[in-house]
Every structure is written in structure tokens, then in C-alpha cells.
Image (cartoon, rainbow, N blue to C red):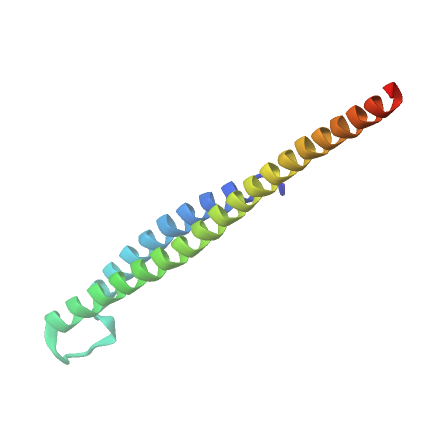
Length: 111
């Protein structure tokens, strides 16, 4: 469940974007169909503009949310990779340190 959390967050970001875009289009069409609650003010053009605004702002909000979620998932993946590389480097440094200590002990015993 908690393995590969960065990849899961990136997948969630794609889902957020897709669902948000679909809901935005549905909202835009809904405003056009219902007239946006306008009764005789401004006519059809105003309703059309309100529908476009509803769709555009919903799509923009979905996109911004998806980008932030995707970026956070990428940040987690990159941080995990840095940690793995640091642990690997530490392992090799410890091995070199042990080899150096063994070599020094071997040299002292030969004297």
C-alpha cells in the first residue's frame, strides 16, 4: 500500500486532471443548458461566456492541482533515489575503510 508512493501520487495527479476536465466540461454544458440562472439578462451571449468561464476556470484549477500533486510525487521519487544512492555510497566507503584498516593491521603484524 505504501510502496512506490511517488508513482502512485503521479498516477493520482493524472486522474485528478482527467476527472477535473470532465467535470469542467459537464459544468460548462450545464451552465449553457440551464441558462446559468440568468432570467432575461444579457441574453444567450452572457450565458455562453459564463459557461466558457466555468469550463476554463474548472480546467485551470484541475490542471494546477494535478501539477502540484505530480510534482510532489516526483519529489518523493527523487528523494528516495538520492537516499538509495547515499546509502550505497556509504556502504562502499565503509568497505574501503575496513579494507584500509585490515591492510594497516597486516602491515603492522609483518613488522
